[in-house]
Image (cartoon, rainbow, N blue to C red; front, side, top):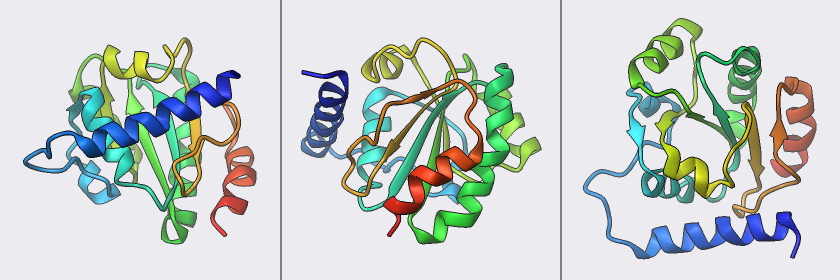
Length: 168
């Protein structure tokens, strides 16, 4: 099996399993407004959040506040969310920072307008042991991974090329 097939099957299995598990008392936030309350999430919470986004085109970005190429990509994600959010796009930031506080400060200072969560090692491993950041995945409305993950800085226009057809 190819890496793409394995990754797609893993994602589909994770969505299926998260739907079968016990329901959390409060669902993880899935909207940009709710994300202003940045919190640390475990793998199961991230899976539940992403499962709740089925029917949307989703960009999942692994990043950190201390990473220069990550910080360079953020304005593009803000712009994409602003331009395409009402058309069905949701950008989700999964920060690999060790603490929530620097992420909260960065979020506020940079006017981020999409959900951001701080994730741990369990999430990183579940996504294939992210080896470099930024690493960004795109998922279609059915929750299937589109193409290979982007590793390193990618300009907004490249993401736009990929998401526009998926939003139709």
